[in-house]
Length: 528
Image 1 (spheres, rainbow, N blue to C red):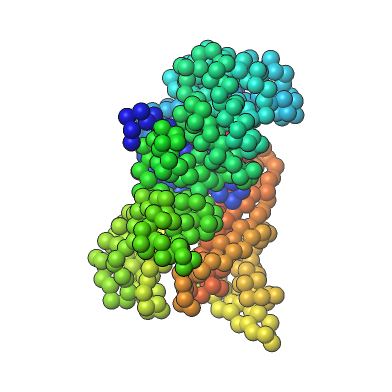
Image 2 (cartoon, helix red, strand yellow):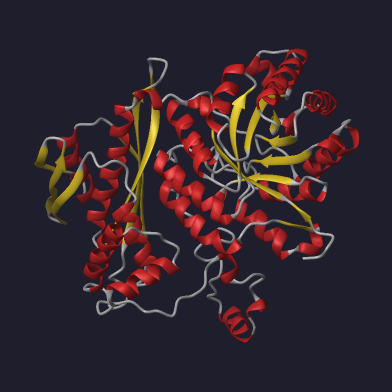
């Protein structure tokens, strides 16, 4: 790192914008786990949620604020006094709190969403930033849909909020509309035309609707932005956000191009990516930059020959730099408990004694079926055994009969609030039969909208993972109903058992939401 290198602040919004992805909702405990891992990753700011959205969101942000040390803990609020009050209630006990407030600035947002004139929006922005500043010394302001706003009006709004005490100005390409050159020009124009801009950090928040969120963010850094808002794995509304891992590794890999660095501990990237994928049930595409399964894989003979001579022939960064160091410890059915626990710790998991015993028992069962158990097998055992919502129902047994000349039939036994229950049903296929049998017991109306099967490891004895999404109507805070999406995953060497586990996980999330209707009604969606 050269002495001229400037720091780029990494503002992680996985727990706010990322969680807004349909089906990605996390429990309070899961959000706390992710927040702790983001602290280990050493991001500078964690946007922990949108406290006015629901009591559950407020509680999660408050717990993160109380527990975390190190990163700034930020909450989002509309430019509404009630939102700002809830946000301050949630973050006020953080060692370093921040209020982030926003209002639309493009004419299309002003006319069709806010039904405000430009003058009304400017006055609201100025007054509400001043109110937020009266509560908190660190206030961030976002002119929503800045990428499509009139630059001259945008300059006026930014000058007004600077005068009102904003300390960070975040420029969002909310709809992912901008191209890199024009987004760079927008940042350059703000630096050159907004009075008092030198008092603030310029931030950017780019969406990926046209696939250029990372490119736009990096172009903004070139033009003087010194905070980038991003999410782990690039998750978020619609096509997602700029991916944290891409931003960080681009700045690290090409320092001469940007003259900037981050303080992120890059060796924690892979583990963080896997944790977010696990909790949101969003599969990482194999060719995803930095964290995809193929990111450091080489199949071409020419490529393999080059890598064997010098990895830099085809790798511009090392797997170890993002936490993908290869293990030399081979585990199998003869491995002992201590060796297993040491290996699990080396993978980055912190398990209690009871949890470790649970996973070790599953590991021994799998070792009897497979000659060698790899890291991918162990990770899927951990997530399948430990990372579940409240278990209202638990799968005890599933039995399927099927074939090309028979009607698929499934019998399932569940344990639930009324003890153990058993039922059976027919289906068009074995999975359909299993789900119909479960429905006869649970009797919870829903629609299966996605069913994905993955082979986690190689070979005919591979562990299979099933990821599903269901949707159902649930009560909302306004007394009505809304359609919500719930995801589930299950893993087993028997893909039909994995399918049953995934469905039970999704149903448990749906049932938990029905028990807490006050937490299901979100405030209007915010895309940043």
